[in-house]
Image 1 (cartoon, one colour):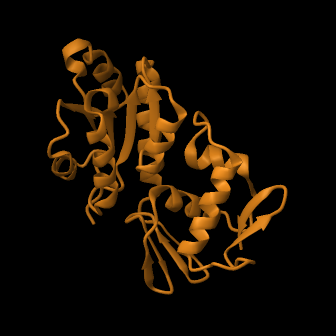
Image 2 (cartoon, helix red, strand yellow):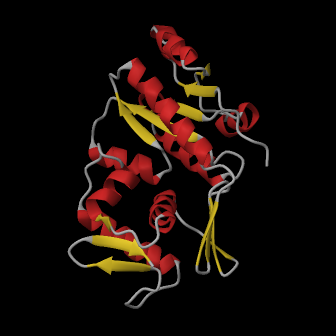
Image 3 (cartoon, rainbow, N blue to C red):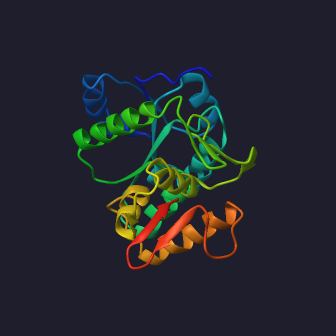
Length: 231
């Protein structure tokens, strides 16, 4: 598979109409080449052609179309390694949770500090590039980070983006006990308010995806009063 270019950033917004050049200058100083599009039409084709490491989507500009674009990009094997940052003036936690469920890697509330946004772009680009070419195999589970695919005994398992991140977190540090708080911060992010019950529900659904419907699990162990670990 062709490697993702590390210096391209696509911004789906209309910021150039009102001062967006300032953000471009900050990104350029960090070694990125920003490109702006004022429409999400053909976003998949644009992303596949330009192969950015990160794209930024302004939720205020595109509304529901931003959700479908996130899903489209994360479902396609040619674009699922691209990082996605959503921008919104709405600070509602449920909106942020939905963004992560749809595949976003970060959610930034407006108004934002342009240097902070550039730093987030850089951090996501660095993190995603560090996972290239990696596969994790634990028991009969194989996690392909390049393709965002998971298989069990050779058969592919269909996971949501959050389920994939959750499984990778646990399997990449086998036998390490993660508290619910740690899982929430690492999978959903520190600025999103979700409850411990959210973790429990996603663990249950992940176990079911792995073919487990009875206790105890042979993959994900519950450490009562603490959290979870991958066996």
